[in-house]
Amino acid sequence: PYTMRPFSEPEITKALVNDQERMRKFNQRLSSVRISAEHAFGVLKGRFLSLRVMGPHDDVQEIYRVIEALMILHNFCIEHDDQPEDIYDYVLRLDGDADNAEDPDEEDSGNFGCEDIIGEAQIPGHETDSWLKIQGYRKRIVLLNELFPI
Image (tube, rainbow, N blue to C red; front, side, top):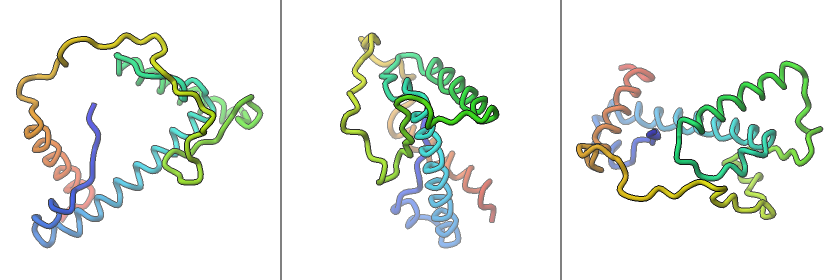
């Protein structure tokens, strides 16, 4: 999986003048979406302790399925007026919020029985750092044009 990052200041400076403002608006939109996503995960981590102690996994698809299942359970709980505050050890966490820093008493999740991946990563030969940066920039331009058309 890849993450979306904002346009850097050098990228904005190099852009055409009429694109610079659009790029800044894109960065603001991306930041607000990221914050909303972090808050949503904070709520899930507060309701489901297992997310706080999940630890690393070698199967990303399994993680996606677990998170999707927890989102469904969360929505089910909301529909049935469940009160997460009534759950033992419930902690409302808004990740990325300065007032809700990591709990110092929270233990490091450790490895939890996951196997270490041994050997070279299975990355296609054409996916160099340079290639990935170019592809990422192209994707941001496509999204920029969709979100903020000229």
